[in-house]
Length: 155
Image (cartoon, rainbow, N blue to C red; front, side, top):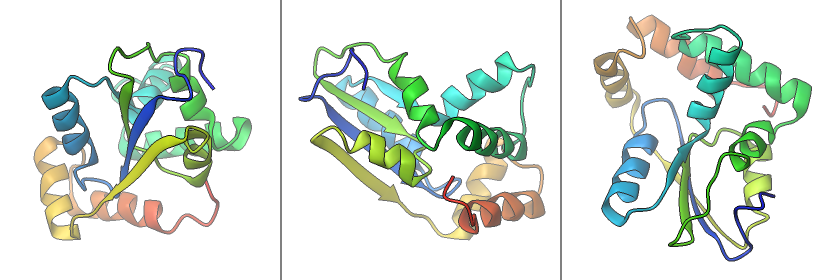
């Protein structure tokens, strides 16, 4: 665990399918209440940039995330995030883009960790991600979405 967080820290975690609205909700809560917001996707993007991947595709991020989890364990991104978290005067932080059991298990070490799953139907998620420019086509979205849902390995 991070030295910046103590056992009394309240962590609100968000998970959901691609385009479900996790980040939107997390940023909204953070903005409304002044809580720090962190994203495991942002941690992954920083690592990607360090490896020379500028503007990585969702597929490249999925591949990198799986590779890191395979090499360092399923909680790797959370552990990396802990090194970046600063103490919060309100003792509440928000983390989104939680993707696997290892990340949840690590966060559950905090007695005041709450995990919220956000759902939106596929058509809405497709429209959102195309509008944001995350994907170039319906096929690209569906490939990434299926990959997320059909992972046989726990990472």
